[in-house]
Length: 499
Ligand SMILES: Nc1nc2c(ncn2[C@@H]2O[C@H](COP(=O)(O)OP(=O)(O)OP(=O)(O)O)[C@@H](O)[C@H]2O)c(=O)[nH]1
Image 1 (cartoon, rainbow, N blue to C red):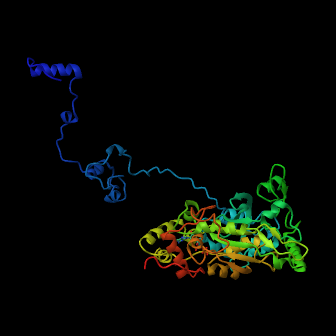
Image 2 (cartoon, rainbow, N blue to C red):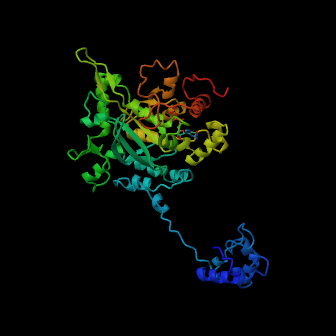
């Protein structure tokens, strides 16, 4: 506002007040500061009542916020309630709900229960504590003999690892059909009595959609524990809902599977084996192709190019799904083709068993120049902390790897010699190791580029399911470390880029 030359300052102020109202009194005008900043400790001590308040109360946060690193006097005193210090502070109690059955109940698993359908493994496996490393030995030792007896008493309901020192069981809780870019698979979810993780089996066996197996076809790959009758009260709908059905499930087709005791899985397999012996079919039908795969969230879900795990999972399903040509036994019959068959056992052991948290830290150490192995060691882990006992129990449940019992030998997709050794140690009969050559190596290595199986469709792209080949500095380093430090059986062809 401009004041007119004729107006006085008083008139101007009066006019201003008229238009805007009188100036508000400020805190400064009402309560002028007379003193220095107050010491919050002194004030807290003044408010505290009784001699029981000592200086230790300050150290133990008796006066919340007083000890926080704030400028002196800046603590918000409106938060101070002035409560009697002799009273216990009211703490909000959280309610913890345990998924674990009481210890007494877990330990009471008895041979006497073994005749009872659905009594043992289900409750045991569903109530396994979440820290398997600490609990493993005590639970296994305490219940060892009882569980072993139990398994032998009801073989159709559980599949046990045959290692007497650490007996445990697996049970297929549910199965469903999953369509993939490579064809349909059956996803099986397993519980086990050693850890609380949901390990899985991805079974490739599309022949199951075409009806029961016949003497001149390989046996279907099915879970014995899934097909078992779990309880007397179980209805057909219950069985179908958990995946115990045959053929292709649809609104028009809903046929529950029979218990292995009734149709006898083992007999079916034995019969097939016998038939194979007579006509020599087992010699010409290759053993099912399997892969034991360890979870890799970064590689499989995020599409990380630090490793080739996503690609390996995809490649394994692709290779297992490839149709199999069977030469004819008689000259009058033509060569025939049967659908590919096998399984990926998907183990929840992220980061070679060290877990996702440690793996993420290991990646940062790798960025600092360390390789996969030294990064693990620097974090106090072993280079590889995985175990394969659960995988073997799942294989057995699926009738794989145990030709002496009711199963078939297997071919294993891996470059890792430790895996083959671990499977054989557990009694899995491996007839062949099939190498997993990284897709990018097939496209970049001049020696491998001529491979007839090289799929033109898999040239460049992402690493996740249905993806293509990728390569990069991190991945090259990762693969080199596998070959040079972990003994993976891959033909190393590229120069060390850091030289
Ligand atoms: N600790 C750690 N784990 C990793 C790293 N990269 C991938 N992994 C994990 O390694 C596991 C896969 O292991 P691989 O060595 O690729 O495969 P393998 O199963 O031993 O060998 P192959 O059968 O030949 O593929 C998964 O659990 C991944 O999460 C890494 O840099 N550090």
